Length: 290
Image 1 (tube, one colour):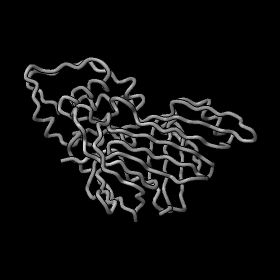
Image 2 (cartoon, rainbow, N blue to C red):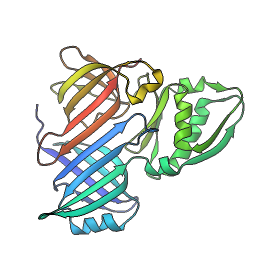
Image 3 (cartoon, rainbow, N blue to C red):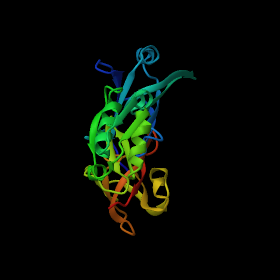
Image 4 (tube, helix red, strand yellow):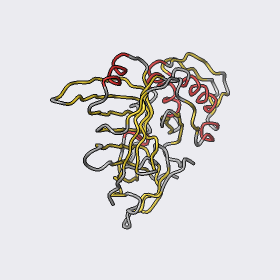
């Protein structure tokens, strides 16, 4: 099933100020997201053909620019990336101008947030995680707290001798979560915490051939997202026409009418496409969870 009437809207500007929006230029984009943002932040690369001179000047002269990218079909257009622009450049190629932009979710928080704090004996892990999350968000004005899923796991872990944090918040948060097989991730400027092998209440979708599924294959994998478990992970690799509702940590049911008919938690996803040619695609990996 090929989806027609595809649309996109790319907005760029400084936080809290009016920016510019494009929706007709030829573009080529790749968005990569993972559950393990302590290792690699979610990122977007986009190439724009013949961006107006005024907009190219904004990209080259202004700092602290953020972008919002929405894409989809007909009336089903959704935000699939929000982040800070970390690099941009334009060059003249023949009769066209080519502008390349790179953006990252949670860039300032990951780079700048630091902590030095001790917690008294008897403190549970949830208290520490909540504190670290609040510190993480202080460096990124456009970010907010999403949810802490499976918080009972954190509440039940007690540090009898207390606990000390010193260093980058990103690393300290990752360390304490890894000790209970959990991790944090950022999705469209919202910070989430989740157990690696547990489901979440994040609403998902049904992905089958009528809704855009192209392929789905069961796999026993050992992806970077779950290396703490040191064992193969049951999951599914899938490809579909661009589906913005497929987000990190969301639960989706996949039915390929053969050997895959179950719910999976999304731990890796990639959206990519070209405005004028080829299909817009979503590829990803989901794991079976309890």
